Amino acid sequence: MSLAAASAATPQPYAYRQTELVEPDWRRFPGWRDVTEADWRSAQWQRAHCIKTVAQLRALLGDLVDEVFYLDLERDQRERATMSMLVPPQMMNTMAPALSPGGPGSLTAAFYADPIRRYMLPVFSDRRTDWPSHPHSSRDSLHEHDMWVAEGLTHRYPTKVLAELLPTCPQYCGHCTRMDLVGNSTPTVTKLKLTGKPTDRLTSMLDYLRATPSVRDVVVSGGDVANMPWPRLEAFVAELIEIENIRDIRLATKALIGLPQHWLQTEVREGMARLATAARSRGTSLAIHTHTNHAQSVTPLVAEASRAMLEAGVRDVRNQGVLLDGVNTDPHSLLDLCFGLLDGASITPYYFYMCDMVPFAEHWRVSVRHAQDLQAAIMGYLPGFATPRIVCDVPFVGKRWVHQLDSYDTERGISYWTKNYRTSIEMDDATALRRTYSYFDPIHTLPAAGQQWWRENAPAEIDHAAHATASREVSLLQTQQQC
Image 1 (cartoon, one colour):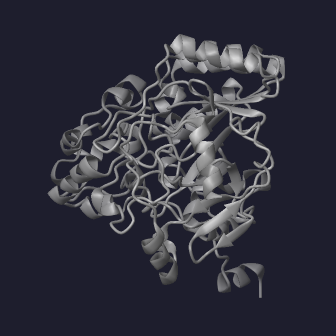
Image 2 (image 1 turned 30 degrees about the vertical axis):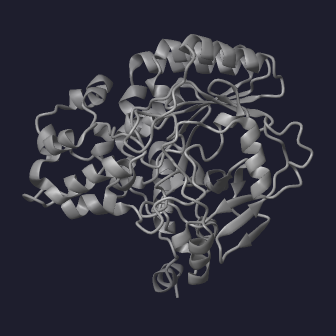
Image 3 (image 1 turned 90 degrees about the horizontal axis):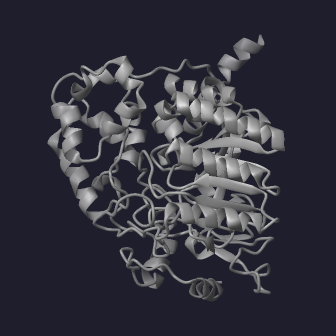
């Protein structure tokens, strides 16, 4: 039997195929019937026509989606949403991309099922009613604010910091891990506010980095750096490049996926080329990290923007996705996305994070065991350098590969983790490296005995609308008590 015949008789669990990227036709939606290609490629037009309200969505889709969907969405905005609605046309256009409207209600089922819609426009019926939030969920689930060494500058790892330059994005994802700070307040969440003047905050960050030679790696984020006026962002990154101890700079932007038009602007392309040239001359790595969760998001415009950044001289464009149930938590969806990024857009699959334990996120989250199975299922198909690691961001610990847990109570869904460094709030804590830290699976994924245990032992419901963030001392005390 030939190899081809044998392959046909016993196919691989995943069949690789090269797929040509396609930009969906935005004119299939009634509200964009007359939008020209020039408008569509305009970053200004994209920003001006974002979907921010249910009324704007109705104006776009009309009766192609049944009234029940709009009511479902309105209820979620009132009762569950931790992020306000903000969807750029580019991202909206990747929902139900292959369907042609066929009359009233013809897109309803497709919109309910669509993976992009599920995390960009969550509806009330998506959410779980038994455990909408995990009892240990928190609006700052990673305790980033507790580790601020300057306003917006999180020093969690020994050699790396996160610089949150601003609290806004061109698009808001329903599962956002920084839902306590990013975006507008919603009926369920009163957002925290950055209090310092932007110039003072950025100066304080730079001063800290100059005075802390152990830091070599800066993730420049927010929010999303695409929302910062380009001259201000370029000036900040240029100063980072000049700091002797900084050797890696990563610009975090989902807008490469949701608003690629921004990164195709002449001002941005020329500015990135200046920064990349300066970085190379200093021996500093400058890269872009983006965030997409499904292959539908990877279109020719995304590929064009990614390659424009590579041509400008950035070292790499990498993707950090999030595992979201109903979006990408099966091996085929994950591999389709990875190959779409790698083959179609020259974007390197890098990480997939488990969805963090923020309020009202249980319908998206999966168990650590599920994540371990996914990691095993995708091995061997992609090049080693582009095989993403699936990681759990453990509170007070940080990113850990899902197989790195110390022990795992699968009945109660509690995994225990250790670490090999102190965060900035534990420098005087002699026990930090001997302690175990807990992470919690979604309760609905547990066996019956485990679910019953949680019903009997769950702590009192947390007031997720509370404005205050725990102090460093209180947070550390809570960690010690839990562990």
